[in-house]
Length: 372
Image (cartoon, rainbow, N blue to C red; front, side, top):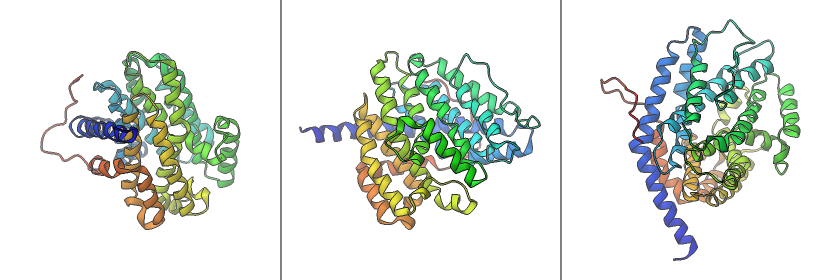
């Protein structure tokens, strides 16, 4: 059997494992976790924050399912890992929403809120006052609960100490998202350029806005957290995973997300990374160029077949989210699908299942038992 056939067979087996675990374990448990956070959000005293939290959980539920895909990287199921992945993504989406609210000092307000993402990965750090710039806001401990859930998950991972420097560095980079929400376009663009010329220097081969886009993704964090579920980690493997995801896989994810949200961003005047390319077709061509590169880097990693399945699943998820992108980018979308390969097409039914709201059957939703 030649190398290509051996790789295809390995990825087919990995895809079956991921799909089976996804349908029977990951998707049901993510829905239970989201239902738990929804109940917690209903108790937020501040009506505006409560509305934001509930709407974000409804609108961005696919993001939580995407984060939970990484729970398939370890051979054994890990409920603490899944809860950590979901809680971190819920916190990120919530912060992304409330950072858009007006504030006297937008950047200071956003930076203080996003400190929660670093604290979530620092189990022994003193939590900050995340609403310090707007002390009148009261979320009833919602954000603090998300942070504490992440911390408990980190301490449950046998290899967390080995990945901690990398994930906290990536979490600090996520503060670039605060700059995306600055209301004045000139201030926003200047701040993003400054960040790219300073914090994004290690991605020097990328355009300035691509550096910021790559830093905006959490995929590298999730891959490392999933790796930490194993007891024995080699330093070179940790570095390889970090280098593969940051920047290539992370940039691909952010650009596909931006392409999927292009119409909505344009309608509300929000910042759009794909708009920086000047034309949808140019953006689609850049994404199509990144797809095989991201898959190749994923395949080069330990458990490369599973990493490749996750990358293909992410591509599938965003294609589904954007209605296959066909109406807007035409041939570009066809090229993205073609370069992603057969796994993306096969994964599409599973990703569509993620976007289906939970059907209530008259029974109370209980937290899942630990099935490790």
